[in-house]
Every structure is written in C-alpha cells, then in structure tokens.
Image 1: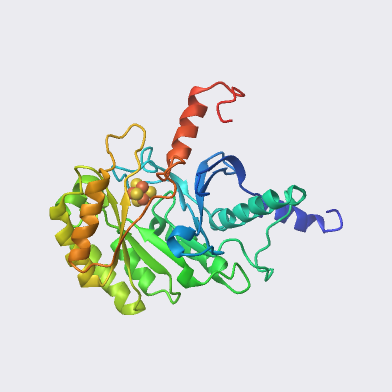
Image 2: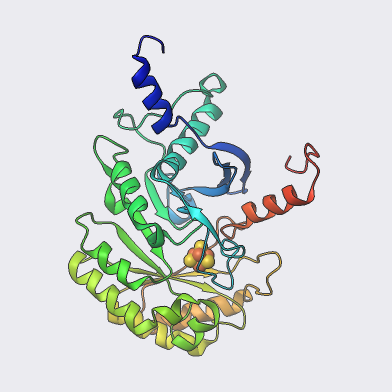
Length: 337
Ligand code: SF4
C-alpha cells in the first residue's frame, strides 16, 4: 500500500501481523460433531470442536451451535487421563488465536454452504447472525493459566461491537486454579464456571490430577463458594467416569455432598480412551448405577452421551496423533489425508 507513508508501513510491518488459522484436518462424527485441527503461524497445532444442538436432547431442531475452544498449545497440568497434557505445555495462545477459532469455524461453515465464499472473511461486529451461539472454554490447555489473554479474547467475543455472544453463553472450565477462580469472581462479566472435578475426595483427585496437590479440594470448594457469592450463578462439576479409578459407587456420596454444598449441577462424562494411556470407560451398567446413586441423593445430574465419541473425541487426541504421524512420516507421504 504505497499510498501510506513509508514510516507507517514500516511500523505496521514491524508491529502487526495479518494471520489466520490454517485448517490441517477436520473430522466429523455421525451425529455431526466436527473436530478441527488448526496450524498456527509457528506451526503449533490446536483443536476446536463444533457441537450442534442435538434434537434428541433438546426435543426439536435448534440453531444452537457450541464451539469448544483451546487456550494453550499443550498443557502443563498433566492430568493423568488427558491427551492434551501428555507432552507438556508449549505456550499460551494469544488473544487473536483464541478469537480466531470462532471466526475460522464460521468461515469454514460459509465455504461449505457456498464454495465461492471460501475466501470470505467472517465478520466480527458486523451485526450479522453468527453461526456460533455458545462457547465452552474446555479445549486444549488450562484456561485460567492463560488468564489475561483469555479474558481479553472473551471481552472481544462478548462485546456488542465484537462477537455479540452473551457472557451467560460462555462457559469457562478449569481443573481447579483456586486463586484465578476468585479473580474471575471479581470480574464484572457473568461467565459460567465449570470445574473439572473428576474426584470428590483428595485421595481420588490426587491420583489423577496433580493440580489437586497445589489446590486441594477444601481450597477449591471455598474459591467456588466465593465465586457463587459474587455471581449468584450455578456452577457445574464435570466428572469423567474412568473404570476402576473414580466410578466406585462409594465416590457418589462425597460428590453429592459437594454438589449440595454448592448447589452445583453434575455432568457425568464417560471416559474416551486415549491411545497410549491405560484408562478405560466403565461399562454401561456402571455408568447408569453411578447416575442413579447421585439422583437418589437429590443431585441435579446429567450423563453425557459423548458426542465426539467417533472423532478421536478426547481433547488433544487429534493433535497428538497428527504430531506423532508428522514426526514419524516422510514429508508428502500423505499420512494426513
Ligand atoms: S484436563 Fe485440562 S488441565 Fe488437565 S491436562 Fe488436560 S487440558 Fe490440562
């Protein structure tokens, strides 16, 4: 743009970038959950998952589309069952890399409807109806470990001049960083909070989530109470059921007690096997028995019929598999087709 002064062009070049996410792979399950693997400018890989509303769950077809967004490349927290933490943390995502996951999926959707629109730029703040109506920050990484970039990105996605996605339609999920939960409670925006609990006693949580040694349950639950006092919003406990680890019916009672204390909802998620890890999903009867035990205690509980079951569903698996293929395959071998 030679009509701009050279000094300005030099400054723009030195200080700004015009980049987008490059789609490396996409997988779709039969029930139309779509998993996207993106390449960033530094060649790192991240995932986002698009989950359309399921008529079987909501009764009728709905325009609701939820995007599960990543906040880090890899993760430092090393939960024992998780593919994202297997190779540690590479780096935090920048604000633009978080926002761009929403725009890139919307661009992909436009290009599916009309291939001529493949190069079109999904607008933010254009006032047009978005494809993505809900966001869950549950992808790769511990969101609250990238607190500042996450909050800046969510303000952009929430602002009327930006994405226009209501704060109550945005859920942040954490493995339990108690101090950051308190910080989030002091933020004026009304985001929803989900806790990746996966164990209702320190004994069980310590076995599978190293973060519990730093912020044991007592500290975590007291931070959740602080959040609730400030926000007055219901918290969700995510509980991945893993065979022989946390699916014993004796675990249901302490879980029900915690849920009652916080008036929290419990979302039970059957484990999705991760290649190279020994954990397995409990049998169907065990899942149902665990659900029934919680319901008997009066806990507001759902058992998720995992929608990504067909698509390397556990978070981080598609990236891990692709990175391993890339490391082990000659260039242009077609391994990623
Ligand atoms: S479950 Fe979340 S916090 Fe734990 S290792 Fe995986 S991405 Fe990190």
